[in-house]
Amino acid sequence: MVVVTLQRNKCIGCNYCVELAPNQFQMSKKDGKSVLLKSAEKKGFFTIKSNDYNILEDCENAAKACPVKIIDVKNI
Image (cartoon, rainbow, N blue to C red):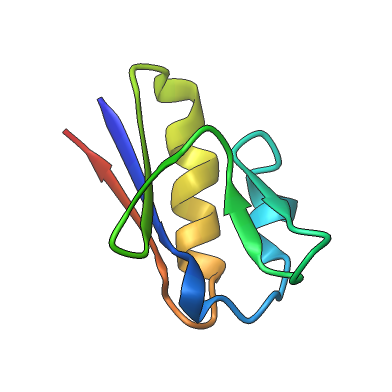
């Protein structure tokens, strides 16, 4: 299972995550911050759990590119 977590309140709106993983992330038109699509929010952390391992590489690349390191990707 792939688990992706976004700490959205620390997002600076650089758009790297959207460029590298457009099927999982998009930018909010309201505040210019990243949105993790189909995620559940808990205490400021937005998380998706997926059995689709095709998203793993794109999400890992997005996490590596994030300048504020607010994306966490786990393959469990």
